[in-house]
Every structure is written in C-alpha cells, then in structure tokens.
Length: 311
Image (cartoon, rainbow, N blue to C red; front, side, top):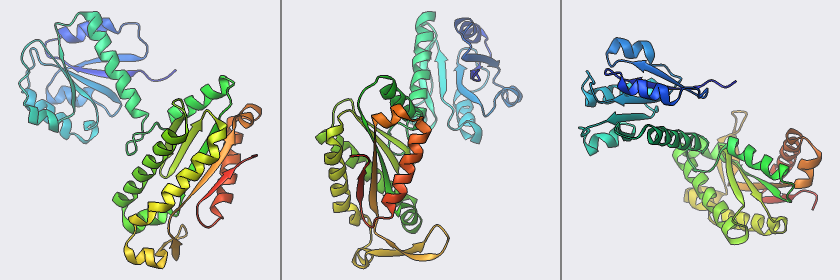
C-alpha cells in the first residue's frame, strides 16, 4: 500500500483542521495532521515528506507574512505547496505572493463538499505537474509508461520512436548546463513541429530524461517522414548552438566518458523505432532492451540516423 499524502494544517483555531479531518475521513490516500504555528510545534510536526501545508488565517497567533516567509526559507519546504484558508481579507501583498509559494487562497465559507473538491483539484494538478519534465514540460516516465500500456492493452497498431542526441554529454560539460538546456528545448520544439506536420492529434511525445525522448505514433506509415523531418530540422540548426570556431573545426576538444580529452564531433541525433507487434509478443522490458541495443548501433554511425526496425 502506498504512503498517504500528508497534509499539514497549521491551525491555532482548530476549526479548519476539524473540518478537513472529517472531509477526508475514510480516504486512505490522504492524511491530515494538525499543528500550531509556534516554532516548537512546527519543528515537531513538519517533515520532508509533507505533501501540502494549509494555514488557517483565522485565529492565527503568528504573523502571516512572517510565517509564510519562514516556511519558504526552510530548505526542506521551499517546494512544498502552501495554501492559506481565510474567512476575511488576506493581508499579503501581490509582490509577496510572487516570492513565496502560495498556490491558492481559500475562503473558509466554502460549502464542505466544494472545499474538498477544490483541494482535490489542487492535488490532481500537483500530481500532474510532478509527472512533467521540469525543463521541457513534456510528460515524464510515469506518463510514458501509462500511455504505452494503454496502447498495448488497446490492441492498436502503433510505432514507438526513441530519440537520443549524440555527444550531448560532452557538449553540456563544455558549454555549460544553460546552453545544454537550450539544445533540449530546441529539440522539444522540433519534435512538436514534426508531429504537428505529419502525425495525428492522438500522437504522444514524452521526455525520458536528459537528452532522451519518446514519441508514440498512431499511424506507422508516417514514421520515416517524421524521422526524416526531425533529422533535417536538427542538422540544419544545431551548429547555431556552437561558437564559430568550433563550427569551422567541426568538433570540440572535450572530455569523453572516460575523462580523457578527445575531439568530439558536432552533435547529431539517433532515432530508433519499434512497433506494436513487438510489444505484444515480448515483455516490455525485453522490447526496451532491444531498443537500447539498436540505439547503440545507431550511435556507431557518424551523423544523424533513423533506424526503422523490421521495416
């Protein structure tokens, strides 16, 4: 059984906690924990695993601005969503709300059912965001796996393309992480443009992590067209991310994976494609192993390449 999401309610008045505890009673996925606003109480009840913090402004003994700022300044809670519940005007300026992570201000006069619905929607939004890659905004591994399983279970014909950059690690270390991120955003735009130009509305793009991406295509007859478009777009503009001297040389002097200085070619792109029939006849992990094998073969080719397996 998964650990329940712990919602900490900072409530010196006690009425909001009682309401929330009753609203989520019987929900094994959510645990509501009460604490006061004093430093000792917060120290005793706040932890790294807390999912959300809700502050009851009514009857709050601490000064709200200072409390929210203190919560934000704690390294452990700087990314924990903070919600303020109030039945009166909330005295935090717009400028301060832009600094601290307050995701919502709730009116305590909400009907209890409406309040539970509102909080549930916030939780759903947080869960969705946690499944997205922070840089590209694309779905991450959890969503990729769910989408792939839906395609397999649905018995539909589909193609899965694995997209990986060649020499990205060396580029990232040579030019810095900021420039590396710009390359990944550039690749994200290319994938979207190729899908919009050649694919279907139901096609899918995911970001496995780093420089690895996934596309799941409903129509297998567009695989070559999309792959060729991605490669052409990438190769046409990737040199814009290099210094002129490096473009003229055609390489950078960077450390390879062994830590040795080596001439590293301008980045290229490797694309490997697998099809639905392989996912239906083999366990998913075996298909991934085959895909990784073909990816290694693709990386042996100098320059960008599309390996269209079994076609």
